[in-house]
Length: 231
View 1 (cartoon, one colour):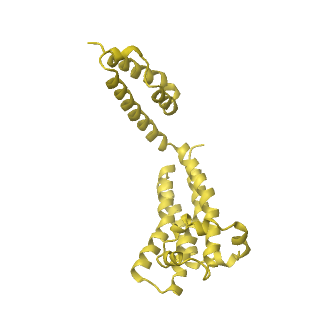
View 2 (cartoon, rainbow, N blue to C red):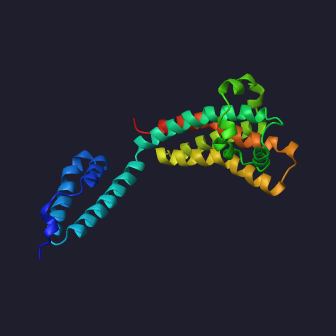
């Protein structure tokens, strides 16, 4: 029996707007047309069931095309550029701050440093509230030189070059390798500090290795990934 609530034959407007955003233009008319045709059929029996079905199909279709979009090199390029532009200057300023920490620094930040958890500083109000003028006033180029980080950078770039020569990377493979090579020193530092538990005066070298390896590698790695992306 036909439900009296089926007087409005139109699918949910918000669902249609979502589909229009995520479905490629060349497929949009075909997909939305099929969904609306089935919705109209279901509407003859029960409006609520038809609406739920349409929303379920909208979510499934959106997730499908969104997953495809995430796998595109276009998005990868945007992510690489965005992460590089944000992370590189942030790390440079943070290293300046770490190199000039004093006794006024809060206790929980000192404890985080002693545990090697440098990444937590990116979310600390005490760090975020510092102006660049204060950070740059203590700037010293020497604080950005670290022999182990330099050696790791040379090794990582050589490994990447040799691996790419043997089998040319795709953009996504390049991104995976670059991410691994940049994060390995940081993970190694966390494990080393967790196991060895060095005294406060001995924490500086592993933390410097952890952070400066990323600083050294992020620009050449970003260039390498972008060079593998299609023009």
